[in-house]
Length: 404
Image (cartoon, rainbow, N blue to C red; front, side, top):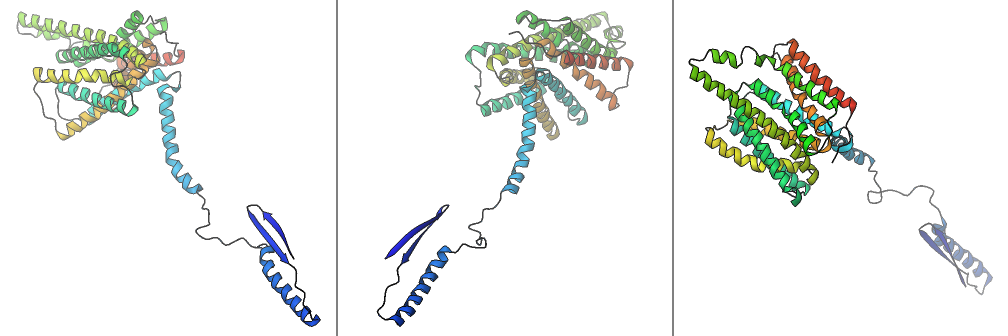
């Protein structure tokens, strides 16, 4: 007779089968046989009933290695990258001050371009050739950006007219600014170019019906007067009057005077078209929901147009290796500056966003004083204080809700 029982422990099940001892005819033989059978059965059953007192041995195939250290080692790099990406995302659109910060960062990048140009002085390159190189780099980098993000290259059909007008106005502003720089002292051309934020605010008031509060108008005026204080030396004894007095004849003086007037008008035209271009950047960025498309639209027109002007108006200069590297570096920085400018205009009211572009002038003056390339002057310091105070007040007042 056999009896079976099952013992279950978790996932392991043990079945016990107990057999009866067979009966033998003789008594002596029955005792010996019974004891032998009992011993053999106990030997068979004992290993099944015996619980291990010690932990089972572990080998390389059964061990479960802890991956905590390996994970910590792998996560350290993504954690640092995650912090940087979170900062960029916060700067890009995670804060109510993102529009102001993007324009301020754009102006800071333009300032860093001036610092790089001063520190790493290289071969002199004509203006149209420099413009062609930068516009080509803008075109290539913006194309790669749009391809990587899966965005349409030419934007949605409803926004293409805006993008075409943005490219046209942007290149007209660039072309007239180059003409102004070639015929005016550089500080005067820079002062005229800094009237672009004022023109942009006026154009946005007309096109988008944006509110121009007294604080916004006062901030723009304070910034522009700060620029005038910084570059005031260009309007003193080295102005047009001194040049005309030294002219050889009246006809030559008249010719120089006409060229000066044309250069001033070209600078004002550059500011007006630049202000309209800012409004088109804002409208195009909102219509496409991607500010990089506005940069691509400008590059696709400005690059071949600058190439044509380079061969018509100037002689091509083959850049050296150092100059080529510097052109590539400045082109990459210009791309970042344009992208952040477009993003800032997309998010923020035009008058407030344009107010932060004057930071470049203040940083340039302070850098010149720190590097001993500019003699410190009372007017320059007053100009920097006016610009920084205006920007600080704009941040303190905060952004307004943009009117579509």
